[in-house]
Image (cartoon, rainbow, N blue to C red; front, top):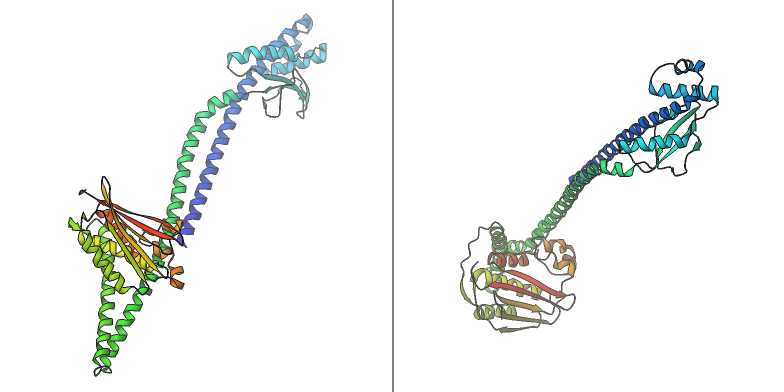
Length: 432
């Protein structure tokens, strides 16, 4: 499906961005650590030069000119290497790591690098031969080794034991910005995936809804076609009672289909804010009495409906409010048990008139309560209903919800599985 492809593309894109961001942060980290070690390495060469220069006082006057010859060139690194090589080979004077550490400490304070360091002498393979302290760890940053032998067999390096304050000060803005960017990107990806998932679920619900609607319209259409066929065949022309029965069936089923279509059109107008309500002071008692009488006439089970109207009139559109209440009563009967008991009550509050319709039916689960007012809510559980429950494709409660919103009010539900369901209409006292 397209949604799966979009999800895969989103996930791959997110992984690619994370990889690029991680690579960029790693390269930046490497660049900063390289800068710190190079700066510390430069100070190390000067410290070694000062230490070597101090030991050069033991050179005799006749040997003084031999040191430049041993250096080979006048670069600082070559000078340090040549001087130490000559001092070791000719005078058996070895470099002092403690003195180098003293010079390094002073020089690092000037360039503002943490002075928690270890001076190490290493061999050509990088093995530590000796060091001035044992504070270095595997996490220490190492400077580039500075050779003290012409054959590159010995070198000195600094182990920066605590470079993290400087690393943190230089990298924290980058990491903070990266974290913010990553957070925004993560939110976008999550929202996109949620949107794709919701669209996929909505598409499935629409398909279920369409199937349910066609399935439930098929029965009355079949009845109309069958009735028309019998009437057209002439077989019942001499049987007026049967003929009248078929006419009644055709009229009832046609009215049923028209009511479904009108309900769909009304919901569409309500959703698009195109329906104009005609609000007036409406007397509730005659409306409810009429609906109760019709419900008792149509019910195929024993039914008991009680009413207690503390408030007997509301400001509303009579046609749509009547249809909303009728839907709630119809639902109470549809989802009833063998013995139907329904109570209808009204109460007065500061801002609203509350109209409650309560039944003793099969109840509604917490999960279903979250979707029953959606246009496709019943379609989500239609398969279960179709196999052994009620018919219909769930426009009733969405219609009620849309009507109440158009009035500036709302509808809520309270229910316990296998015990009861109670729907409450909040009808505003004043026009909003």
